[in-house]
Amino acid sequence: MRTVISLPDLRSARRSMTGTVGLVPTMGYLHEGHLSLIRRAREECEWVAVSIFVNPTQFGPKEDLAKYPRDLERDIKLIEPYTDLLWTPMPEIMYPEGYQTWVEVEAVTRPLEGAMRPGHFRGVTTVVAKLFNGVQPDRAYFGQKDAQQAAVIRQMVRDLNFPVEIVVCPIVREPDGLALSSRNVYLDTQQRRAATVLSRSLREAKEAYDSGERDAGMLRQIMKDVLASEPLAEVQYVSCANYETLEELDTVDGKALLSMAVFIGKTRLIDNLVLE
Ligand code: AMP
Image (cartoon, rainbow, N blue to C red; front, top):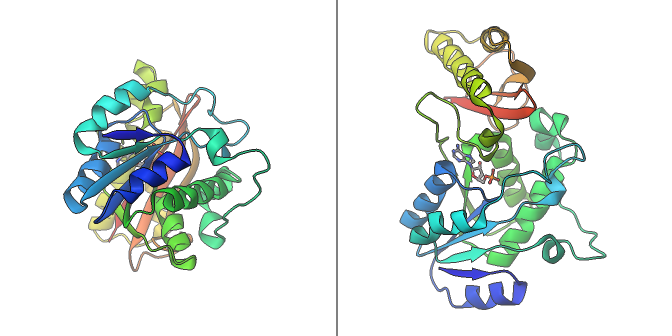
């Protein structure tokens, strides 16, 4: 595995890769969720590139940028067996003085995460566009864990004609259902136990759907009721939306996304499940 930081070094490494290149963009502090994307890229591409960059522009002023967990040495050991190229740019490289260009996707960024985290997706789409321009991958791998992010990136790629195929991989979970996240390290023992309420609420709504429930309001209510049963959980939003547009549904009559953001203490967790 070759590690590069600067754009000239990245370009020179990229030039030596002939054949399909898969990119896995990450913010580091890697876990099995990230590794599932990297292994999938390994299976499908001749070259695997991983980026690790805690992108400051996607964090709100009150969010956890400064304390976002980082451990590059550990990350390197984890990805080395599957990765050809690691790019770890620094904020000064991505956003040098005088930086003034942004990529903004419209409607699909407005609800859910976009409503709760103003400016978040502008930061995400801008950095992903820059990662794509830097690495020039044939395919890029994202997790269904960040369902709206995946929808926003798909829209950006379509709208701006990026010659990149977007591959979205399933959510990797702990045995008790908690979706893996770098932010799970913020949870203490009691909070960690409480955090299983997110996946439980999704499972109950899914069971109702499987038994024939198609009223989106009812499915949202089932999730809210389960979440309300956990005293440590403070719900930010609960949604049953169209899978592509992310608009809230009255009735589920096609592919739909159940999703939520919930605070457990100070830690904000998200989770989701697709209804097909
Ligand atoms: P992050 O480092 O949090 O920006 O995540 C990098 C990529 O890994 C994103 O595409 C995430 O959706 C994906 N990812 C994070 N957690 C999981 C998970 N539990 N299962 C699958 N993919 C994940």
